[in-house]
Image 1 (cartoon, rainbow, N blue to C red):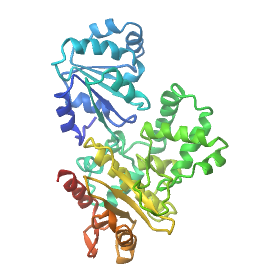
Image 2: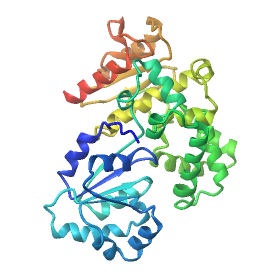
Image 3: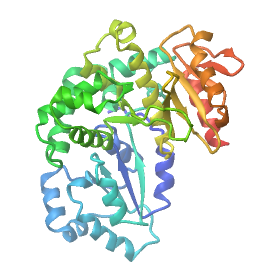
Length: 402
């Protein structure tokens, strides 16, 4: 299979030199095993998806570790969490040796806590999401924001989909969700009827980029609001969805407090919502929300790829003022961003950014950015610029590096 270099390879090697253990987490099929086997060809690799190895790791962890040479990659460590205490003993015998044990795990709910507690002070953490726009461009001719959006929505961002353009997407996503439900959900959580949970995911896909109203989902599916909250926490922890919180500062105004919902892979959202062609993507009723989802998912990947928890928010006031993204890329910087599905940005589209800067001048916001399909930057006012996606990420990087 073709290997496409990943953005966090530099961080991977740096972290291997800083701790005896490393854990690479992220959703299924994000490329964790491929990344490690490519970057660390001299490490012994085993997967606990193998029933024999899984049973041995659970029943006789000492023999399991004795039989495998170091340095060692153990894939799907969530199948044998008890193994970690035995790894700790070995690590403590030679704490000065770095990069001895590398773990991967597809199920993040509880996994990070288990790793962090069992190997406290001995492990570094790395999170890998589906491919970013920068990673895709290393393999495919995607010259502008329009082509990037089109490819992400109608092909998806998982490495296998990026590399193999002949895959039947409906079958692939159906299989992906079935595996997720059977192996990550049914075996770990007591969530009740899987059919209700699957219906919930489908309903979420139709409302991506919108405010989350848990009471509506509770009524539509026929389950309690606490159940909806629990399901959301599972989907968020396993990186199926991302919840964008409202800006938290004490602003002295009535602010909407509900989060907005986005999918980490817009391709999954489109597939579930039945958006499978260019006409529906760019002109259908979900078009604007889908483009917003795309821009937010790529912003999340941008920060996580650098080991930074995404400092992302949105704001909506009782008077109707809304800004899609408020980003705090560095201390003392608040960057307002509006997202619009258009190739012809105008001053009219900059109004919410201008109003935000006027209404919340006490926050000292940076000049606003309007993220569109335009293939060139365009100053709209003295305080708002329409930017390409490439320039948008360049500006974010500039703030981080300051």
